[in-house]
Image (cartoon, rainbow, N blue to C red; front, side, top):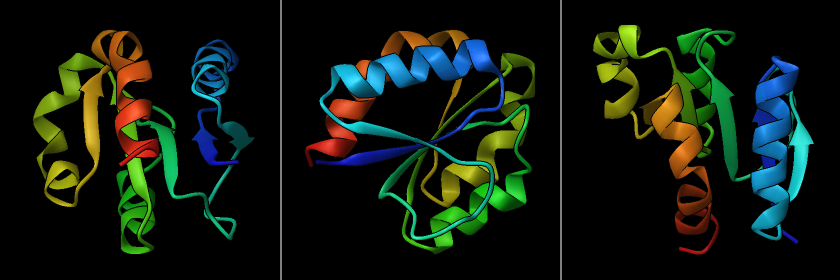
Length: 106
């Protein structure tokens, strides 16, 4: 069974992501850092995780799906260039099931 890492410290947001991961038939795994081995897909909260740590995940071949406050969207260009899918929080939670389908079933 596919596993999705969830690096989302906020318990409310974690629960929403966890439910979406389970609904896609994958197994959620709570992450708190770069512990390995890492799942091929990791969901990250940019309000709680340093962008450098997110980039480190991409350097390890992980597909990162990230969300953050829309007011910080101008700072996401570097992450997007590294292949991170970054969306404003409201859009992210709306689109999460479709994103998981795309990245779990390439």
